[in-house]
Length: 336
Ligand code: TRP
Image (cartoon, rainbow, N blue to C red):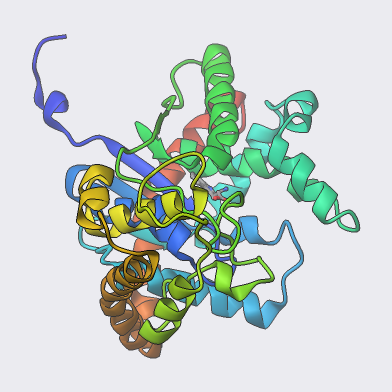
């Protein structure tokens, strides 16, 4: 095709985050910080995936608080409702509705192969519910409703994105061009943050050892204390290496917040001890997170403003979602 206005349109990006408790430095450096950058170059839609959260049992009051708090954190990070569409998944009923439709185009066998389903059903053996099993069809609906070109996901969600693509291709083959088949987007700038106490594990808020993870909303003293206690290794050289997982993790975190390359960091701390390095990492992280926490504390107290923003976001999202949903319904043969 020759040049037209389409070629200059921004690419569309969609991503969602579950409201499952405190967001961590891992969520921040692994995904959210990049969302803030992406809103400058792409047409972005970001949602709090609250429907996904009930695949494991939640306490109602706590879930409600976490949905508010996750939405407020997105705003506090600098996601701007004027630039991006920000909403809460359950406020746009087409997600659940399309998920049913897509579940009839998803094979039992392919869902059975999802490693997250296997892991989670082992972890919650007393509650292996159908939602936990069909979760990827809900995620496919989240994505396909908005026809994004790109979906930024971490390694643990790649398999789910793959299935969303397979479902889209299958549906399009049957009914014509209904869904856009999205590409995974793995930005160069993200860091995979490991536990500060056991770098063989991913940083996770469900870790029993609270020193192993940092929350985006932790205060400065807490952050510095946790970094001071971070595990290192027996030599004292600040350098990246497979034999130095603790130090490598800290270098990667420091790089994630400062934007410095690994080589620059190794040079900066050449001849300096771990104590000095850990303090520098703690301070850099605390300085980066402090304004986010200040924003959050302000935003979370203004429930009226929050409500206005999530309602507005849902109304914008639903316009696109409804269009795609009804097109799919019509193709399948429903009476509209
Ligand atoms: N399943 C994702 C997670 O647990 C969250 C999610 C839900 C998502 N819907 C999505 C991510 C759509 C990307 C696109 O992290």
